[in-house]
Image (cartoon, rainbow, N blue to C red; front, side, top):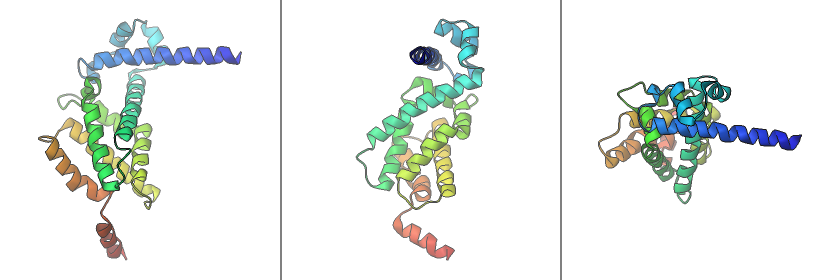
Amino acid sequence: MAGNNWLASRRSEVAADRILDAAGELFAKRPAASVGMHEIATAAGCSRATLYRYFENREALYTAYVHREAYGVHHEMLERIRDVEDPREKLIEGFLASLQLVRSSPALQSWFSAGDAPIGAEIAESSHVIKAMSAAFVESLGPGDDPATVDRKSRWLVRVLTSLLIFPGHDEADERSMVEEFLLPIVTPSPQSADEMSQATQ
C-alpha cells in the first residue's frame, strides 16, 4: 500500500510539472498576466477539470510556477558565488547573478513587464518561499543581525531586485554602481560604517 501511495504521489508531481512546463512555454511568448487557465490546459494537453485538480485557481498555478523557478534561480546563483568569501562581494555578485538569471529566461522575464501588471513583483513581495530564500542569503553574509533586521534587509533585497527587473538600469555597469551605492551599505555595511552606526545609537 505504501508503495502505491508513493507512486500516486510521484505521478501527481510529474503531472503538475508538465502543466507548469506548458505554462512556462506560454509565459515565454507573452506577458504572464495575459495567459489564462484554458490556454494552459490546452498547451498541457489536459482538460480544465484536470488542471483545476492540481491548481485550484490561476493564482495557485502562478505561485507554484514562480516558486519552482525561484528555487532554480536561487540554486544556480549560489553555485555561481560559492567561491566568493567576502560578504560584500558575495552580495554584489549574488544579486547581479540573480538579475541575469531571471532576464535570461523569457518565461520569467515576462513576469516583470513594465507595460503590464507586474505580477512577478506582487508574488515576490507576498511569497513566504522567496522571503525565506532571501533571508537565508542575507544570513549567509555574516552573523550579527537579529531576526527582525534580517527580515527588513531581505525584503529590501527583493524589492530592489524586482524594481530593476521592471525598470532596468542603463547597462550592467550602471546597475552594478546602483547596487554598490544603494544596496550594499544597507545590507552589508563596511566594518567602519557599522562601528559608526553603533556609536551613534549609544
